[in-house]
Structure formats: structure tokens, C-alpha cells
Length: 209
Image (cartoon, rainbow, N blue to C red; front, side, top):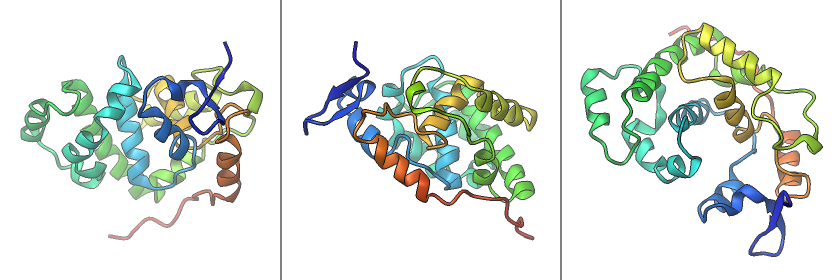
């Protein structure tokens, strides 16, 4: 089976983007483009955690409900969630109602605040694990890597939950830490150009607040 399919515009794309109608927009405009925004990075790590044992289609279809439920994934606000918030979320039919995953997001928000205070930004911490040897011909042939293992271990040591190597690798693919589009995909060169122009975040002096 070919690793690409021909989209409605007659151009080739990664085959997985044909699996559901909503995937094409996500594939063309989000997946693989580099991200340095802390809130978006935290959102993706959280949603990848919710995906564990489920399909990305399920999570993507509920993403707006997740954003409403978790205040746009503002981890400063989420870090203050209480048991009352957990019960509220467990009653929210728009999201995945899994106590362990909900509590993990709250825990991770608290850890994200600590990380930002120490490192300056979540983005600087994450991008320090950007792969340096990913080859286009190896696109979508693996589910973990040396770098995803390392980032997973680093997050776990800081107390994060639901951040196993496979979850972290999917996060790295989506957030542009590597260009894992199939080289024949029309989006591959767009992502490549975006990554070339992308200013890698570096540790900044943490706020004195």
C-alpha cells in the first residue's frame, strides 16, 4: 500500500489524513508545523495523554470541548483546580471522562508551572530534545525514538504523568520537533520551510514574580 493518497486538489498527502474527514484540515495546517507557544504545547501533551488507549479521531472531535473544560489549557489556572473541578469534568459529556487522565492534567499543570519558574518556558525545555538525525525516508516508520525516550524520562522525573515515550513521540511529531510527513506529501516542503525559519526557543531568565 502506498504511503500517500491523492487529496481533493489532486496533490499527494500522508495516507493517514484520508482516514477521517476532519483529519485533512489538521494534517494540512497543524500537524508537523513547529510550535513554541507554551499553552499549545501543554494542550497537546494533555490531549495525547487523553488519547492513550483511544483514537486521535475521538480526541480531535472533542478538542473544542476539552478547551472549554480546561480553560484553553491555561496551566496556571488548571494548577488551581480542586476536587470540585475534577467532579465537574467527570460530568462533562463533551470530553473523555477518565479520572486518572483528568487528574494527570491537573498534576501536569502544577509541574508545568514549576518547570517554567525554573527553566523560563515549557517550550525551551521541550525543544532541547529536538531530534538532530531524523531522515525523511524514515517518516512514520517508528513510534518512539531516543529523543522521545529522553524527554519522557525527563518529564517523569519532574513528576509528570501520562507522558510515556509513545505519547511523547506523537507530541513531537505534531508540534514540529521533527518533520514526519512523507517526503512525497505536498505539506512536507511547507513544514520544512517553517522549521528552517523557526526560531528555536532558548531558556530565558525566569520571571521574578
